[in-house]
Length: 320
Length: 309
Image (cartoon, rainbow over all chains, first blue to last red; front, side, top):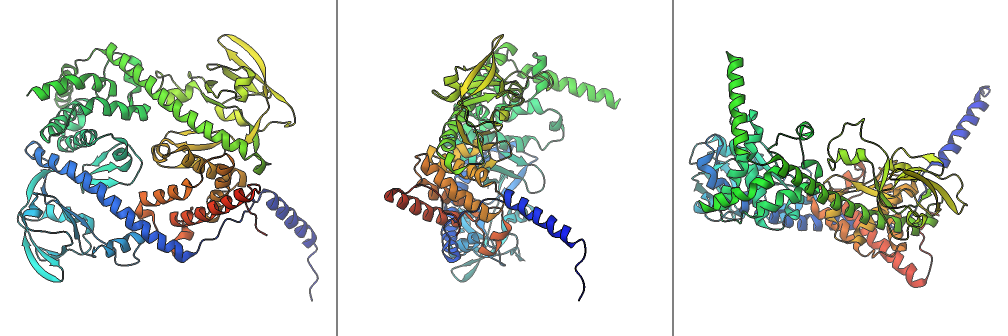
């Protein structure tokens, strides 16, 4: 038997002191009600289903507003033309399905891209694609794993691809004919943010946050914001554009309003929406500190300058 | 040659810009001023709402927070520096903008109002300690048994001292965090609600439940682990109930949180990796807690959360 170490008393004392301190600053504990895991899983699946339906509704609203604008602008974006098909697709993951995957599977979505919605009067509708169709292959290539990147496939292929479809157990071939549209397939961004943004490289997309969709009073207001962003995507692709950001804002405003007007929306919504957004985010009111302190020059990205230009722009466009 | 070409192209571009931009700079300045006024009014309305709900919770929960009692003022404040950062006043360099705490709004019959402070006053010190920023209003007071605390202020060019009735509340007053994300925080200096969550919540009752959760963290001195979050939810509901808010809205609020982003719904085995419990678990726990509080209210028992045996 070995003797206890002579420093052990000091050690015990230190440990005691430490535990006393810990006990003092340790959080207080409460006894909230316990929740059963099975019940939570069940509710989780219910919420996923309900959430998926709400999400699809929002995506359908976005597509309904954005697709006509992209098609209308096709002659004005020579550098940003992409093939347009007009379907909403979804996929599920194979391994470790999440509650959302289970909700999608219950609604007939497969691992391969599955048609969730067909836009009326689109190439997909004309080719006879239907809700629930599973796209098995594309010009002979398997489409598994492509999921949300089908538009990349479409971009890289010839003008009339052949799809192999599975519809209620049967296989059939569908010949698709593309339509030309400006780039900018909309993506629903699940955030409370108020600003849209886009990516002009790689898989180009237009991100529209839910916060903005809830904030606007009408589809007209939402279209004004979306059309402005689409105009940027159409115009910003040129190299010279990088240098002239101020001029570009005016050009994007003009093109956006033209598109919205041609698509049949009330462009008077543009008078209020930018200022209402700026009031929610005051740092957008004047973005350029230096310009502001100089006080003379006017920045085009000023919400204020824009608001002053807007009424005359609207009258000019409506009189055409 | 290349440089010359560049200069030429810049000149052309700027001339286009100026011709297309035929607005009078004075009109723009006036428009900016009116926009700033509207933005300040909107922010003030949000801050007022948060302070009103927050102070109700702070007062009614006083028994539950013996270690975290601080002054209750009933004010919304801001410094010039904060207003510059939000671009609500013309730009000033960081060094020139002052950090003095200005009162923008006073709740009627609040301690600050009863002391005789007014909107526009600069609070210089409280309880003998100089204020360097707004959160200094809520420093711990030395002697909590007094009836009043001295507050030194400046109105216009004159300085004065008033004795403010000493009223205590839990932790610090809540305030606005300028972000569009749907979120709320408890930090070291205070409790914050984002502008995003103010748009997301449909009623004061829902905001009270959210604020209750954050004050719960302050009272329990916790955060960041799922079981602590469950406890903060639990005590937060008690705080909201004690302040007289409709707690039946709480499970619905978390239901909507879960629906908002179905990608956030995860399987049970991943719950331990997250900082918060799964939304469905919070819905069910809050449902049970609402029942518990209802039963206590019916039986006339004090509204105090259960502690482990």
